[in-house]
Image (cartoon, one colour):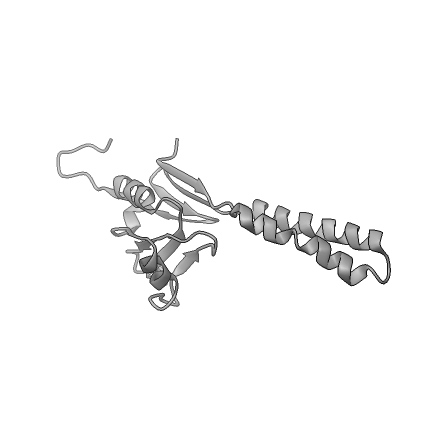
Amino acid sequence: MPDYRERLWPTPWIYLISLLLIPSSILVLAPVSVPAGVATGLLLYLAVAGSLTLTAPVIEVADGRLRAGRAEVPLTLVGEPVPAIGDAARVERGTGLDARAFLVIRGWIRDVVRVPIEDAADPAPYWLVSTRHPNELAAAIRRGSRRPEVGEERA
């Protein structure tokens, strides 16, 4: 069982805004055929909603690994995670962003966690991961990456 698992689903307003594809298609295709406009609009909406749903990445901490989308890293190779909330998250995603960072961010999720990578062979200095629960994700990474003291066994 994972220590932490979250799927970065789009927010409902994304699906509502996507509904505007239907009247837009009707407006564009009305001179040719209104039923074709309705059908095209419905197909476009289903394609957009389906792709947003099917491509929503999973963030998971389990089995000594951090998984973000299709990428994963052993927790033994990560540093101290730093949750960023509100304005701090905006800076992390914007002016404070290192171009070499590995990103799994979604625009509809405000908060992020910055996870330093302590592997000299990895070109990414850190991972920046969107999450709706930054403190819980950071805590799960800390728990999973905690190295046992001498004489202490790992739980």
